[in-house]
Image (cartoon, rainbow, N blue to C red):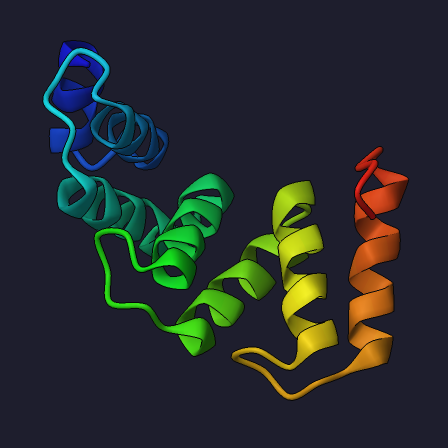
Length: 123
């Protein structure tokens, strides 16, 4: 966690994401959902798809962020467009259910297909 923190302090997007993982899991540093969410958000703001996906999960589940399906859907969609397979699946679910976005079967099917094409067995 120490090396990730050093790079994260310099604004390195992937290190922000990795340090967020350390905070979320208590690996090498104390468990801290709020700090994890803050770090994911900073990585997401720099266009890091893993940061976007994990930030979306924080909003979706209300861990370290207030629960907000609209923001979760927005971030899942952004990460999905970058090819993140987990985001494609989760965005498809929200589109199919109309949670945080207007219900859209075509958009759901497109994202399920994209996830399946990358080997996601859930899709």
